[in-house]
Image (cartoon, rainbow, N blue to C red):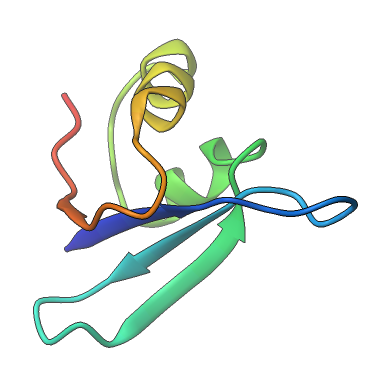
Length: 68
């Protein structure tokens, strides 16, 4: 699975996209509320780790989802 952080403009918030290995969009959600979405995909990390990971992502760079 891959992750990309999209920069919002004005009143539109930042978003996160999750994509599978074929680059098909799996999920699209706000970057300021990632915890529940990550839990849906059975990612077992603390809430602080998830927030820290999302905040450290660069905007517009597709990366493999690697959180631990």
